[in-house]
Length: 144
Image (cartoon, rainbow, N blue to C red; front, side):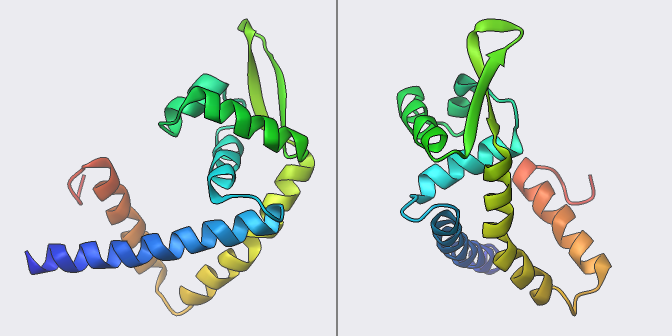
């Protein structure tokens, strides 16, 4: 049980660091952007061509709130809507070229910091950590 508590403590630390990074990245993308809007923005970037309903489901959020946030992202020129060819009543959300460039620029300091932190790690250790985190997040056994 001590090992599980220690793991929980490390996850708590990582979550605090992650939240701080999200706030900093949001500010770099667009001054005054809230971390929640940044999360919506990065989800659209990761799942390019997502519908508003899929976005709300993915983030377990209210569709109305997602709609307002997407509208804000559109006004900032970060996100655009295109007609869904399979359902004319729906739109597909995508990140604009400017949005993608701003996201890349915003993420660069953290990516450099992570690369620097892992610089002395063996590739095998990085791969093992990735595999174990994937197994944990998907409820799989470590060797699966």
